[in-house]
Image (cartoon, rainbow, N blue to C red; front, side, top):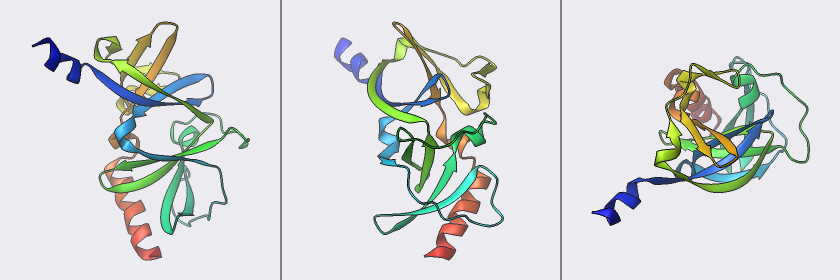
Length: 161
């Protein structure tokens, strides 16, 4: 019985930074982490959609997570990364301040999200993991990239192919 429990009690998370907060997404949803590159703007998209990049021959929509969460935007640096995630069969890049870690998150360290964490609404969160001296905010990518916006991005992607 204890063997089966260990399978369900941990997830691996890719850790990235926005402002002074650490965020995590399930490693299974992350395709790659890329350096910031030239982004082609797309008209008539929400302000947090920065445009698209050509990633190894695939047109990939890019969103700025700071903008998505109504956080103060900043200039991109050498540390800035694009985390390419797959949500409902759509690859989307999320611009983050830095991405620097993969960690194991024990299930018993995860608590339900408070109403607001780091200025971000609970609806975008899966929970908060308390790990030794770290607090890791776990994102719910399906909500961060909500279905209507994903449909818009998907339609754009299809037009551009």
